[in-house]
Length: 355
Image (cartoon, rainbow, N blue to C red; front, side, top):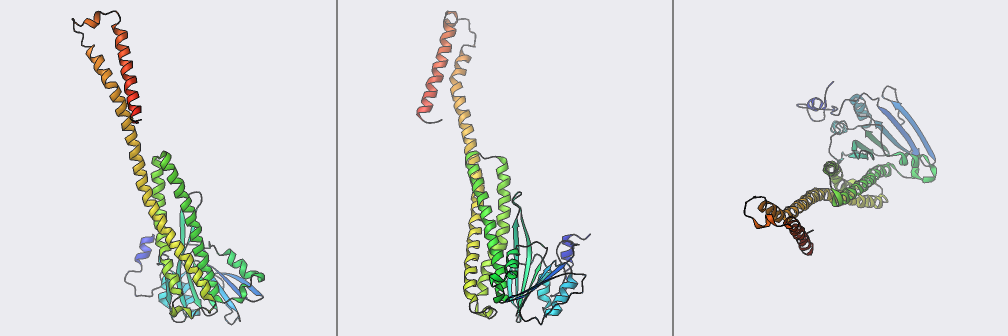
């Protein structure tokens, strides 16, 4: 079985626009979901890659075609031929590591995003690429797997009470992007809560496991920053004059709201990334303070025992002519002197607030 590196190397030396899948080997069947909708009408059809599927491109409404799986390059090329999608775009679709971007290809818009999910138990962040093609009344979305966060959108399309069918395909594109960005905010909230918990734990009682947690948080925030930071630029580009002709006039308010959400996500991931960096410093500072406290305690104990050691060493020399050795109460006197010294030193240390 080819590994991921060898799959990527397959593109070396090939001309631009070569449609070669560069992701991990995948044997899952590619599924195609086609939704036809307009006001008071909804129809859904599901095909597999093995089916001889039919697309009613003359439908007088809007069409959402979602492809779950991008490893079947022949199928991707087939959609490219049907909808006149150029090979450079197809090359981006089958490359799961393609950067977040938006391109105006003349007759359609190409949008590449990363859809994220957070495992609540392991706190592991998973991601997959979503490519969106907006072309007149048709929207195509290409996903790596069948997992997505678009169930609410499908419900709204199906439910006539939501009036989703009165909006065109550009509104559907906006909803897909908005759902992905809103999911970013939910994940960022979870990460922020975890940072708060780790920060509180470090302040009160840090341990070696905390450093491992911080490293995991750093990796997660770096991953989030990598995928979320370009979103602000992408959404801002949607509002430029060159792309606004793909959207009706009333969509500018929705795009403005989407821009606000993207800015919030960008600012939040920057803030969290900085907080995790500060957590590392806080951990080492707390560890240093703990070590200082230990050393301080050991120093105080050593200081207390120094005069006691001196006295015991002095009377342990066993010289013959030491007058105290023949005194009946010398043993108790020395013990009392030692006890008094200890009490005086503890009182002095407490008065100076050394412990």
